[in-house]
Length: 180
Image 1 (cartoon, helix red, strand yellow):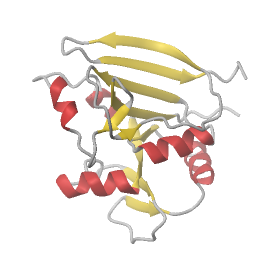
Image 2 (cartoon, helix red, strand yellow):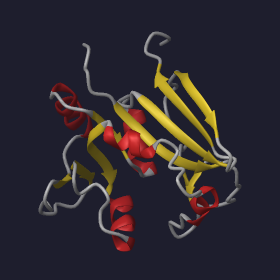
Image 3 (cartoon, one colour):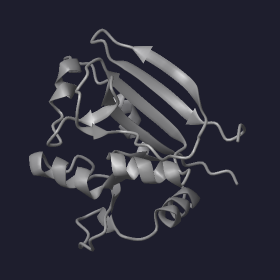
Image 4 (cartoon, one colour):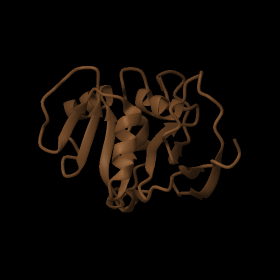
């Protein structure tokens, strides 16, 4: 069945595969912050109208700043019922049902903006269509691992690879559904 909406994980990790240092610390991302260089983020965000995020990531982000996706439809995957905040809904139901429902609607692409638990759950259920992974050239040594063990084998193919003056590399993969 062909869907026009794709679910894309857009995320940054360290060279050793971590998306945060201990204590959900994201300071490592500042190493590659350069004025007027957003690594395609603005264009990417313009291509999506719906955001999915795990509750822990949402809480971590909103403790520091206003929710950056308040202008889009957002689903926060959680075990705890909470009332909606504007276009942000806290979703406690079945992930596969939600993604199927969203992909059957017309609209722009769907953005998975973390965290690791949600990415893992989506990969386990084979719901991710693309991964845009920005690799920051630093080893963190400990923290939150992006891809944990225990995932079924999945094949992806490289759509593009770019490198930047900061040393960051951005890899864009698409799920290869023909191989398995």
